[in-house]
Amino acid sequence: MTRKRWADLSDAQKTAVLVAASVQLSLAATAWVDLARRPAAQVRGPKALWAVGIAVNFIGPISYFVAGRRKAFAAA
Image (cartoon, rainbow, N blue to C red):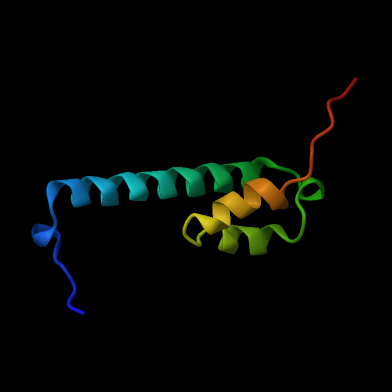
């Protein structure tokens, strides 16, 4: 299988790649900011491990948001 160069892609393929990259970077950045601001007691597992895991395409940030955070209880 030969690799395509950027110039070989159609406009629709280029758009799809840029949209996917934007979504991935937005998810990762949001997850890292949340992880940095959240106290360790509200994170399931070590924060350092989650910081590395968030870098995994789509799966990492989504996993963090679904399984990595504990529910914060509102102060009454």
